[in-house]
Length: 469
Image (cartoon, rainbow, N blue to C red; front, top):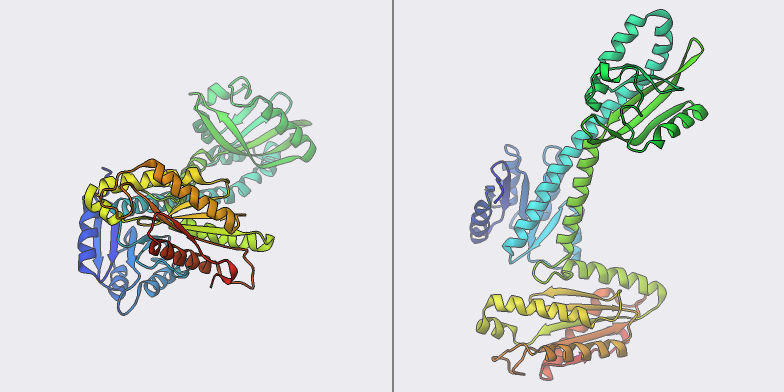
């Protein structure tokens, strides 16, 4: 278990039972927990304490979760604290409202503790990495400001050779940026500063009189020649990325700026190789964390297929796309018959295993890469079938029923069969801006599912296509 001593979670909920269960669970994972029983209490506590993350209930008396979130995000001192809504609301409009107000995620009630911990961990990690990246960017901005001053060293160098070698040498060697001067023709170093020595791992004496090739600096040996060619044609290089090899053999990513200096009829090369390795690594870590967050927010934790959020998002996308193309879109809603009896008889662990098997079976019945299978909720599954008319969707429904029957998953307490069966509702339409919204396609499938259950279950029912009324 990770050490969470430094991470404080603020729970905002008016239900004492929810607070007790969630607080104990978070503490078991090493988090510090702060409690607020309503929105006003939350805002008051935030005046004195800044938690690392806020778990915020949507439905509360007085100031609800949405208004509380709006006020949190309106203040500079609290706007960057991640807010995760806890809600039983499933309307996409409510979720969109929360995200618009600045929430980073939703956790659906009743809470699945493992999912809650996974989401909390990802957002805490993402916030930590974002802070690191902001610090790196701040340092880079400072370096870029200094870089403009360093570029002026070119003019300083030209005049310093003539007027004051001592002054130039002092400014050159004290610069916080790595700086080098080398002959343009051969590339031999005639001056480097301490910052460059720290970057490369070589001492001043080890570098002087040598070339980058002698010291094996360039990971790609052709890079220096390309730099020289660009300098000869353009006279300058600004912030180009290359890889340097240090004395110890480690690879550092540098952002190189360079200019040609002319003195006494001979060309010299002034280079400023700023090390950006740590910044790139921090960005890569943030990217990986973002991808993991995307996976968590679109994949059902139990079945590892698409979750309700991904389903609603995908259905909306396909509705718009197929509406423009005037192509059919079908939807199948599947419900496991008498699944509560199954859980009561075989236990919840067996029930979870059953849902996993059904999810994988549904994936095998799809016909096109564009088809999407998702866990709709509990023992319900959704199948989105783009470019599929009602007749083709009915064939898919028949295939699903048959495939599940062939699995022969024992269900001794079913009133339909000795094995697990499904009831399915099918709806289909060609979307258009003049017709009903995508939610009507879902409502039609729900009504068709009810008809299938009334007909005895272990079958499917097709809702009439016109108007989905």
